[in-house]
Length: 87
Image (cartoon, rainbow, N blue to C red; front, side, top):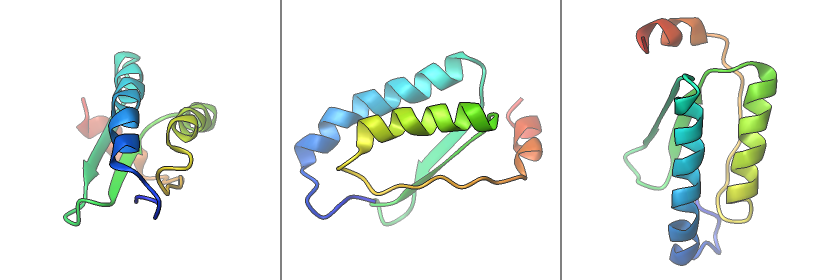
C-alpha cells in the first residue's frame, strides 16, 4: 500500500529496482509469485526461502521501498505445496 505522501515519481523510480530484485530471486531458481489486488493499491508477494533468505530479501526490499510503501512480511508454513506447483 502507498504511504500518504507517496509521489508518482517515487513509484517510477523504485519499480525497476523491485523488478531487479524479483529477477535476481528467480534467476537463483527460487519461487516467487506476486500480484496486485483489484483496488490497484495493494498487492501480495509469496516467495519461498529459508528464514535467512527471506530476511535478506525483505531487507533489500526495505532499502528500496522505505518511505514510499507500507509493507510487512509474514511467515506461512504452507509453502511446500506451492513449491511443487511451481515446478
